[in-house]
Image (cartoon, rainbow, N blue to C red; front, top):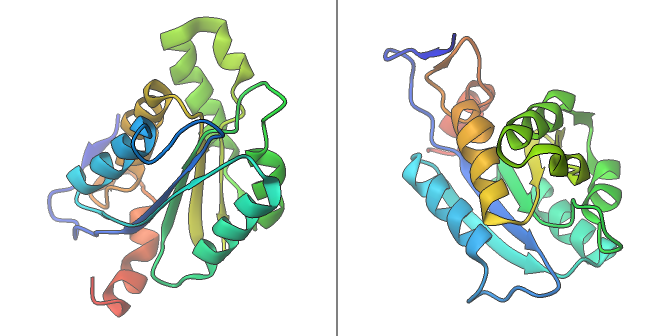
Length: 179
């Protein structure tokens, strides 16, 4: 079972949140609000936030700019991963990834199955690394964002989490940025 190491250094990471939706506005983006607030509550910073319709090329441009920005270490997108004609996130972003983290999608669908049953089959949640930036792509519902954050991402961005976590990979980067 996992546990925290109280002697491990605490690392605060710079994150960016992008909501992919044709219908949400900044005022109705409950999933983006949730993720931004959860990031701050966990001791990290949300340094960029955006809203994008499902245009594959606009999505690719935003994420390309963010992964090229040395200030951003983590990107979390929500939306565009479901079973519909508007599903664009995977097609847009997987070509940008240097490495995929297959276990993220598998674990997300397992946790989601425990909550919503076989409907999780329609989720194409995935994660990977691009230019040393972790990219998590989750469904757009606030409930799915909570499942991904509380069940996986929060713990993996916690530098005290053992036996391993993603945050410690950014220890030298965080120190160099003066974070």
